Length: 196
Image 1 (tube, one colour):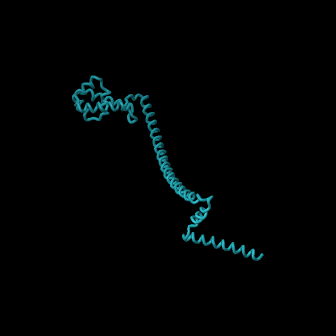
Image 2: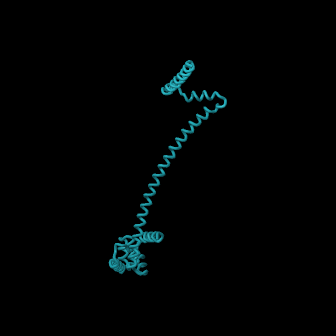
Image 3: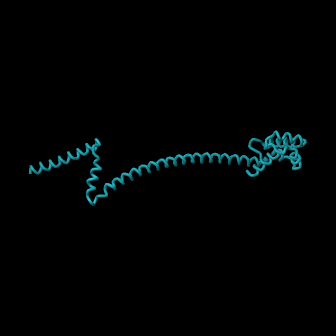
């Protein structure tokens, strides 16, 4: 019986020393145990494709890691774009709210009697009527002088004056304007017409 236990412990000891030796060699990179095991297993006819499958599995593992990294990069880019879109949406909502408030102010002014399409919240109806009266006075000057004055004003002011005058007065003034300035006014009016 003692021989049996001595033989068993000897075999166990030899096995333990062998495993420990393989581990030490693996740690110090003296031996690649995985390759060795695959070569030994590859000698059996039933398992001859195991080394090839193992190498293929390693390559697939590397590819999957690369794809995962690429997906993480794309995911981060999408998150950044999503955050940017959310910020832009918030800005658009703010702008929409502001435009709606301004539209309400304009509608309220319009109901109070501010009929000019250039009326804004900056002028009260009395101030707007004074501006209209002044524009009528400018328009009632001699057409030659009005044509000279108009060339010094902004296009918007010119159109405001024209709105307050009769059509025949506007035609007389326009006949006295230089051709290039009149062409500029016409282009501007067309742009406003198309924009509205």
